[in-house]
Image (cartoon, rainbow, N blue to C red; front, side, top):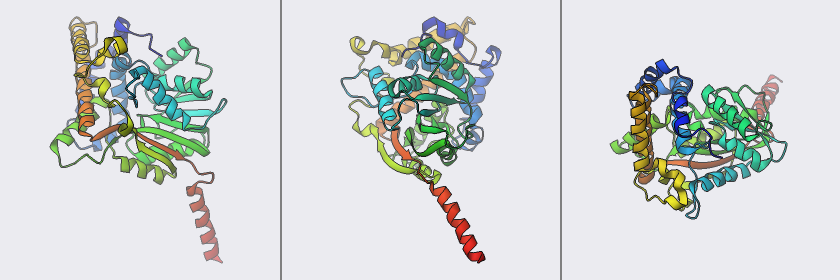
Length: 366
């Protein structure tokens, strides 16, 4: 599903919900969060970091990616768009949901995956997003595509989901909870709103075992990935798996899908890749030529006052983030598709532990 807002029509959306006169100030405030490697300032202000990022970056994402802002496991015979749809279907197949079930998409962007997964499964899918601009874009796309009956949005922080316990038959996230300041806290909220026996399926961004904290090149790659992608911190695959268990989940599957793909995950944003216009013309925008054309076009628009001030800075840090992701992929230090499939027990371990504690206290009292 390609976005209808293309080309020149995207210009009016630059800056998202940031007032035009405040765009340069918001861009600088965002960049200031990443002046130092210490994550504490970013994790302490994660909502502001992430909201500023998506207000500033969403229009660039739509221009470059369409409606689904994520990478994909890709076979050599697939186009990028085909692989993105299959990647979404594969995750949805792990949920075991059917028509009439209720599913939550945590960190849904403008809703490309939720519309695809609703069509694929027949379930009703709610997108959770804390960015008002992205929700407004998603609601417009729902109306345009006719998906407003089985797809909706709720504006909320995934660290505090405003839904009752046991609300959803399935929950998934695609490259979104990497924005969480605390993985255990985020996964615990997902655990709470998922029905007993329900599945949480996830594609997570992670540092791999190849990452060496003592290596200056690795640390620089990590820092630029954070800056260029609005991340307050970065976690390893082991930390993600441990956080899921601490939240109460049973792990059914875990795999780094990077290892089984024919085409490297970072290939779509590698500016020096071989580009085939007859097979995948759409991806020209992320080639070296495409990136430069976009960058200098935005520069010209900012100079003449059509694009808000700060737009070029946004383009610059997005390019830096993309280059860092490519470097992370080529060095093997970063993955964007660490698959985990986890189940909420029919009787959660947390409830059992509380029950045992009550029984032990009662026995001791006797």
